[in-house]
Structures are given as C-alpha cells and as structure tokens.
Image (cartoon, rainbow, N blue to C red):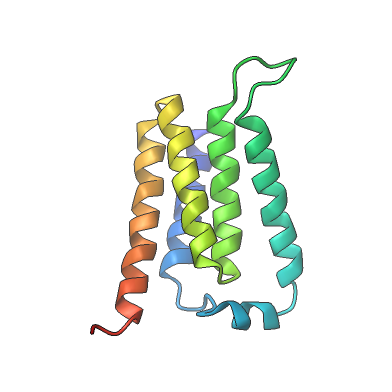
Length: 128
C-alpha cells in the first residue's frame, strides 16, 4: 500500500470515528440493509489479515504491512456496523502488525483511532 493509500485509509477511519451517522448500537446496525454483506466483507478482510500475518511454504516471511492494512479495513467495516469492540480489537492488531514491520507512523495512526473510539465511548456513558 502506498503512502497516499495509507493516508486515505487513515482519513476514512477518522471520518468513520467522528461521524455521528454511525449506528450507536448493534441492534440499529443490524436493522439497516446491507449489514450482512459488510460483516461478511469484514470477516473476509480478517481472514486475509490472519493469513498474511503467518509464514507459509511459499512465503517464509509474513507480510505484516499487508496484514495491518487488512485489519484496518476490517475495523472500518466493523465500526460502521456498530460493533465497536471488534473494531477496537482489529485496530490494536493492526498496530501490532505495523510495529513488527517497524512502520511507526502507521502504528501511531491506528493507536490514535483506538483512543478516539475510547474517548467517544467515555463521552456517551454517564459518570457515576
């Protein structure tokens, strides 16, 4: 993935996190049309990420950058469907992949997205 594509992906995640149009709960997300398609796409990205993060017979070194990108794509789709916990988990896995590849900028950007999601959740819960 080129740096322009990575910047575009980071912008997409930022817009998804800051957009108020995202469903607040999983029940709202499941009521919309096309939810199952995007969940299936997210699962596909997750499978590809797991496959790329492991060595194989033809490829001895895992492709961590590609795996991180796939985890980010899955996180975007999960977040848009209202599964915030799954999105945070995918972004954390992406950060690990980028860190192993020593792509520090990408790792930092994914951590920023995770903290943005946490901050948005903290604002929505009442203080006891």
